[in-house]
Length: 326
Image: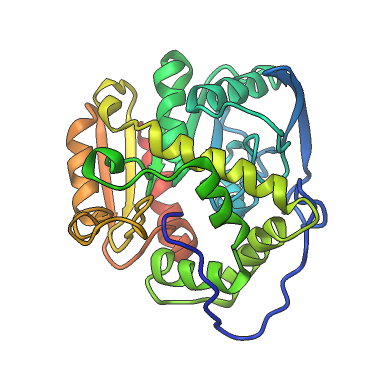
């Protein structure tokens, strides 16, 4: 998410190339598409709509992925929720993964929330629990603020946007600069970054699949359009903070924080004094929990940016217990 993906080798691995809508990558559940018009273009959102595998409990959970993630990376969480009786919808936002990469698009969290609301409306879903990870936490916050009557519960898993990097002194990157950065992305660089930031130096072989997914998308035949959309999305993330509006969330909110996480947008170009004070999730989680009126904070002391992938058994146990208690 935040650091520069450099070309640091962690061993020889030939990553596959995928199409600009992730064609060729095996979806863990049947992939569907929601077609709609937005900003003068015909677009489509890829999504998975997974039915309960046990007695339905009548509830729906919508999973919002992070910047370097996809709906597919929620695979273990989808399984855990569906086994517990939930219907699960996991979309890929426009500009990401299996969805359209427009040549021109004004990215805002409001626009992505509206797109997602349109999908849920088409699926006949009027009430849902919204779960957002990483950048998906920022989107989940915006969605909950825009559609509070339709959000039963809100869950944020190591969301970014718990601080305003721009206000704290992180330099601004232009979209062109972000684009140049994204075009330099390598599979080895992704793996090194995720190893240190997401997984706190603990690598598991199953993580390689997600490195291949991201690098294959970014190095495939549509890499220029993929990079351009990624650049626009980074600009959205940096310039549209949500931290000032956490106080307005009304629904029960679960904040799940891997305390060893150090993700902070632009930390790679921040001055040393700024870099020293950003991305401290062990502090940020506690601060934000105090801002949200009806918040429950759960901390994972030894885990990083993706506790749902690092410690899935414990993560899902806590998640399911909280969902059932509210």
